[in-house]
Image (cartoon, rainbow, N blue to C red; front, side, top):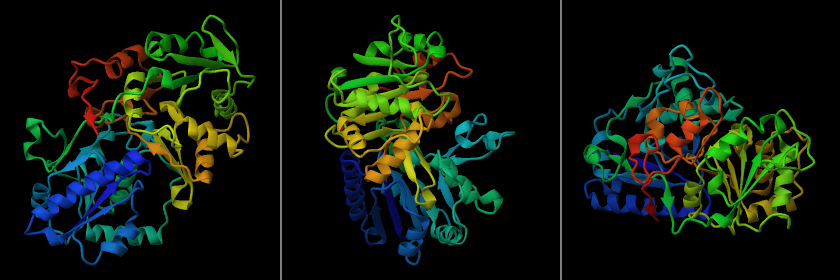
Amino acid sequence: MLIVFVIQSQSSSFHVRQADRQRADLLKQAHSLTEVRNQLSITPTNTPALTVCFLSHSFGKNSSWIVFLEEETSVRMTKLVQVLATFDKNKEWFLGKPLHDEESTIIHHYAFAENPSIFKYPDFAAAWALSIPLVVRLANKVRDEPLKSDFTIDLKHEVALYIWDNGKGPHLTAVPELCTEPEDSPQALYCATTLGSELPMCGEAVNKEDIFVAVKTCRKFHSERVPVIKKTWEKDAIFLEYYSDHADPSIPTINLGVPNTERGHCGKTFAILQRFLSSDVPNTKWLLIVDDDTLISIPRLRVLLSCYDPSEPVCLGERYGYGLSQGGYSYITGGGGMVFSREAVVRLLNSGCKCYSNDAPDDMVLGMCLNALGLPVTHSPLFHQARPEDYARAFLAHQVPISFHKHWNIDPVAVFNKWLRDDLRAKPSDGLNRSAKTEL
């Protein structure tokens, strides 16, 4: 049995270190399996995914399985080999830990609206696997029928839809041994894959004084949304300003001279970027831009940022994609919060990048500019463009989330208190999940 491991990583120095460490662990385990050590091939990548065409061409003739791993996925190789051996490698298999939606959700384009729980898609953190016959067929399909989707929002759901192909391809087969249990959990005894903490810590959390927070708002939401921020997370930010189309000293808000727009807000966002580099605000290493209906944990963000170098052009948040199959670009979706290092802001503005209109979509324009500059967009699944209700329960169960977005049909203060308020006594299943951290 020849297994190809694909480590789905990213190009920032932190993620490269993570992938290299995981690769070393996989190689060490492979060499200890004397009966199969010459039958295991490991392929790390610093891109989010390898195309099935490349996999089919490179490994289709002499491999049995392609196993996709996240950086934080721990593998028990002996157990994984045993599990894969129970499946006929000559048939088409799509294996993983299944997730499902409790209700139809915007992030999945309201798919299967009548019965959203019927469709299963893999939790990438638990690893997922494709048999080579399926990889070869998918490669031929991609070659003959180019992908048509404009937007990439939730890759794991979209991958499952593409493989299922309206019933022409296989459903996801649940493999109980592909787990997202903590490595030291009693429940992980029979798992082939496990997880460490989902909130990595690479040293001391960055100082509060290192982060400048910009909140985009407008006059009509001063009394509705701004009070929620003041009741929840404002106190955790030392440097914070509200930017509006109306200067209200009671909040206070700042009018940047950009008229409010019903959508897009590109003009306002670029005015914020320019202000961040000016002498009008404190000189900080990081800029966080949020909407006025973003719920965020500043303490957890400070922990996460300990893993990134502000001297690098870091652009961090929940990554979406536009036209990726036709040479498009990735972007940080604005509602979950966009984090920029000072270096990234300097390069963006020095490039001459600008909005084509004040109401252009700011996050997408920034994505186009970053793509043109060759600067990476760094994804963290801990940022969320939507509400907790819009994500699979099992997906959130192993997270320590950093943000959610939207007040629609929820009590935003209650959501913040359940999911984002720090409680060191909380356990992973408590909604908040856990505050345990991994030293890297």
